[in-house]
Length: 236
Image 1 (cartoon, helix red, strand yellow):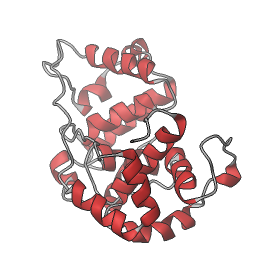
Image 2 (cartoon, helix red, strand yellow; image 1 turned 180 degrees about the horizontal axis):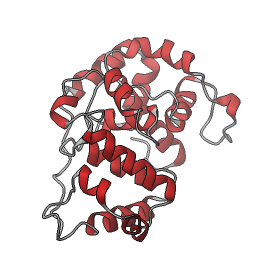
Image 3 (cartoon, helix red, strand yellow; image 1 turned 30 degrees about the vertical axis):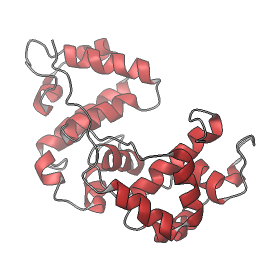
């Protein structure tokens, strides 16, 4: 059986200091931080970039439960060749198409995974040890060379896998909606229209106040959406 994944941990940066700095530099964001409560994001940085991107590709544009089942079947397809809950890029590159189809992967996702495996082998996709020494933009430049991997996917990896503190995914719908709720005229009960959502340049200008803690600010903008939808109860 696969071994359980290591438990997620807190980011290595000082989240408490980040919240203090953000609250001091941006009073409107301070109100959101107060309403949403403590920063509780966890990161799973023990996966290699290859493993994390395999999972990201599988989860693209399908329901989480369906994606989890496909991911599990893909892993199981390599037993007993593997004795751990991961497999090597070469194994993925060498496996027959039928094995990928049996796991539930579409043709496009199979092509993306094979491209990911090939670019892992040739060094385009860095090892975990190497990627930890790279800048955010260098990581984005490398990983977006993989078929099916765009900037947004890499930004999610930077925030939730590598625990980078200063990432602002301006193309993320939740971030944009949270920004509109916090700094714009959008109300929780309003139906969101494209005109309600901020442009990237507007977000970048505001985010100058948030340096070097844009990842923490992003997490709170996602919480703004949760508050608006009732997923998070308002604090007393």
